[in-house]
Image 1 (cartoon, rainbow over the protein chains, first blue to last red):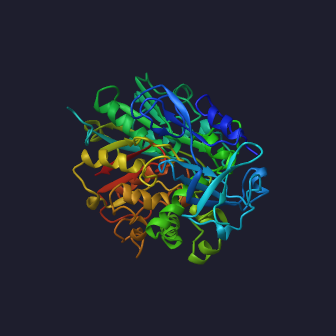
Image 2: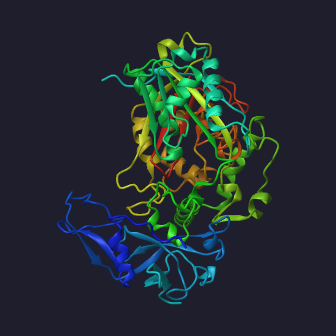
Image 3: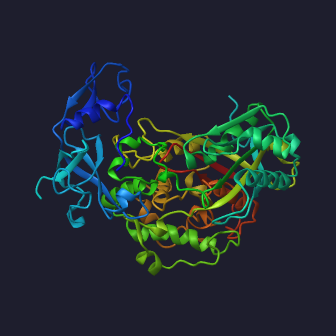
Amino acid sequence: MLSPVTDPDGAPFWQYAGQGELRLQACADCGELRFPPRPCCPHCQSFASEWRPVKGHGRIWSYVVPHPPLLPYYAAQAPYNVVLVELIDAPRIRLVGNLVARAGAPLDSVPLDRVRIGARVQAVFSPEGLPQWVLERP
Amino acid sequence: MVGIKDATAIVGIGQTPFAKQLREDERTLACRAVLAALDDAGIAPGEVDALASYTMEDTDEVELAKAVGLGDLTFFSKVGYGGGGSCATVAHLAAAIASGQATVGVAWRSRKRGSGPRPWTNTDVQLPTPAQWTRPFGLLRPVDEIAMLARRHMHEYGTTRDHLFNVALACRNRANQNPSAIMYDRPLTREMYMTSRWISEPLCLYDNCLETDGALACVVVSSERARDCAQRPVYVHSAAQGLPAQHHGMVNYWNDDPLTGPAWTAARHLWKHADLTPQDIDVAQIYDAFTPLVPLSLEGYGFCGRGEGGAYTEQGALEIGGRLPINTGGGGLSEAYVHGFNLINEGVKQLRGTGTAQVPGAATCLVTAGEGVPTSALLLRT
């Protein structure tokens, strides 16, 4: 598996995810959420930021089904889904992830005909600390 | 203010053969393409004082200039974002020459993408995308990133696989007329397209560009100088780069409208500084690393409305005789994938009247760079 190669801006996201928490960077002055994380606020230019918990409810905005050639870890699970989840709390923020049967399940654990644009999903976390998504109504 | 409108012209083009694998190295291929372009223009290498290429180009200015015997260089520039930089290389030369920073410019690209590794297989180097947010989840390749936008476009606007096939077919049909094209002797049918293997659903094998070894170059001079050159000048009428506010590169997922990409930004500047409108364009060379980039670009550059890019391809619109013939040499899908530089040279051929699939009387050509990354575009005219 490719582990996230993080940077100073992104590291807190992964630290919180490792604790089973979905948090997003927000401006500590004007309050705007932003993603991906970055050094300052594009709305008010403040360098003060905080990490705000979000509920982790979303809808599938789009998805793809990769087939080989792929890197070996992913080829072994192909075809699998990669979903783009639009957060109910923050509609401009769409997180890339995988729709799985339960936390920690493989990338191909949901039948492909269950993956639909508009489906409501909920964030869960893998043992490696990656956010994953399960259907609210499986 | 003095602009660049019609101030410069492309007066020479050159290319190497295209193949899955060429024997010579990238530096040698770069030298061959540059010398061929200068020979085409009738300009001696010692007169060149400006260069432009891509940040991903591995042959640097020092190596190229000393090998082919260029003169003293006073302007050299490299543009980022892979295939988004193609047209910007010519735009930078046009701006430099129009503003007096140089007199004879050469733009080039040499790449052994056919022989070399696929860039996404390198797990040590971060691609120019926010990789930590995408790659761990198996969104590994450029095709996966663009397929995400393609699926949404299909969902929102009713774009179909047949629309994407129309793009692939137009490019293949033109390649079948171009003896230099990789796919010259390989026709494409709807049956082949619809039954081919998936790469990243909803995109199949034929939605993906070729993997090619090859090099190309062109020569830019002032319009005054162009009148004395060997070839009919092809004027740089308008040029633009485009990096929209809150754009995120190929994973443009985190703003109000991910389907409105850099083409829209480049197009606004391009048309604002032109005497032409989309209705005046005789032929277009539209960057086609993946078929969905064409409907997106048709929308972005104003040939149709938002969401109409798929339907625009119907009834042979992109073929010779259609309302907008595209990629008349075969494009990246079927001639060669050299980061879009073959689209620039094909635009020049069309306006010289020497295309292998010539649009009769073509006097205007839009050339675009990669949509979905910070991009660039040129309006060329006779």
